[in-house]
Length: 107
Image (cartoon, rainbow, N blue to C red):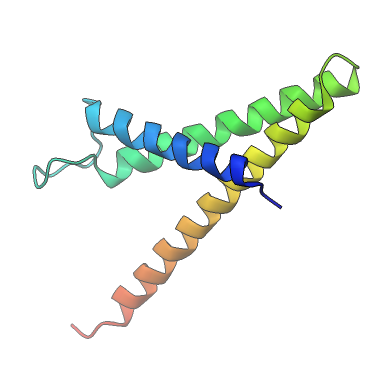
């Protein structure tokens, strides 16, 4: 179960991703409408963030197995990865649901 501090870190991470994506020049699929980042750029940054959290968790776990890491750091890294993956799965489910709704629309 995620603690409030882990959730706050996840929201802060999302805010950093959104602000960095807004300032990036590599906007994937941007059509010129609106001034925000494209969905593709936000998705790419989010996937990268989740992968980085997973790598950090793996590194902490290996370090703990060899006796070189603090157990609290390992638990925090694993919890942050859990929150990131859960958020990503929720977004995926919403995208699939929206796609299914669009496909049900009459032409």
